[in-house]
Image (cartoon, rainbow, N blue to C red; front, side):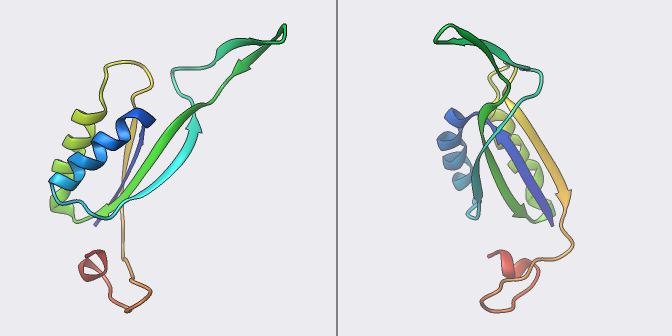
Length: 113
């Protein structure tokens, strides 16, 4: 199993959710996050004082999927979220050793369904 974490622009989330649903991805965890990368910071002025904004709002979408689903999920994320501008985000993939459903005690693939 793999854990996919995608940090994306907030405006891309609804379309991504629909596209993932179309290929059968049902389970998602979504968080509002903030961060920066190549965007660095921007300078702003508030009541005559200059300040630097260093973090940008993003959405973090997490899912645990079976290995054979990974390629199509990455393709959907990349195709949906790419604007070819700095700040499109990142996708992280890591290996999951085991998953447990708390309610039933199911493990592995059965716990994901």
